[in-house]
Image (tube, rainbow, N blue to C red; front, side, top):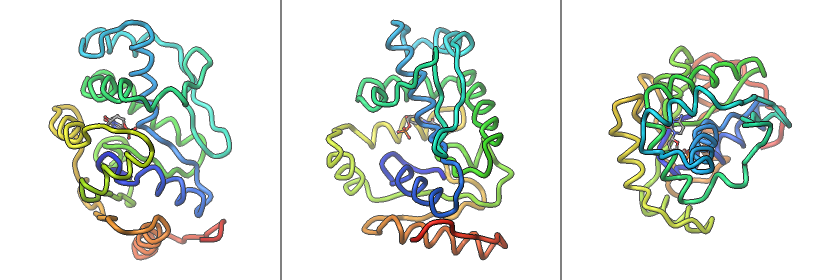
Amino acid sequence: MDGTSASGKSTTSKHLAKLLGFVYVDTGAMYRTLGWYCLRHKIDPANEKAAATACRKWKTTLECVDKQVNLLVDGVNPARELRTPEVSSATSLIAAVPKVRDWMKKKQRECIQFGDLVMEGRDIGTNVFPETDFKYYLDAHLEERTKRRAAEGIHENLAARDQRDSQRAAAPLMIALGAKVINNSGMTIPATCDIIIADMQAKGAKVELVAAK
Ligand code: DC
């Protein structure tokens, strides 16, 4: 599941994973963990070399708890501290570093050890699991996305972040070949999941729902 910021990737992916009984992976949280780590260790996120070195040296583990994958650093899951505007900006910078992306891709592919996945991010269909038949690209009007973030108490320039994510040289945000594009403006999460499940079935997947819609 790829798409623009605040396009509903997380809520949709979590709901879909629950319906399918799959493991949910938030790759943005993995990038954010490195952004958070850099800020905490006074590593300039704009310094490509330093970010790549940090990523080579930090001590991480992947864990799967309640069907959700977490990336721990030094044994800690900084989940609650990952959503600040400072971490968002730092993360967008480090996410443009090719060596960081290589490291993340390897870790993200390792998640398959936990079972079937719903994985969300910006380059899952284009770069991390290009071999999957089930690629979805979510988007919504900028005004609606901005309102969604504001409702979470977060005020940030989404257009600027999307532009950075789409224009970087390394694995930019783009629509994967064969991805189904869903503009979910004004659409509920279950309705978006219905579209995805119908598409999976149309592609020949035997879908068994393990939770009520
Ligand atoms: O989805 P998010 O807002 O938590 O993502 C945080 C940042 O990480 C965002 O700037 C895009 C980047 N990112 C990425 O480049 N590739 C991914 N697969 C996931 C996130």
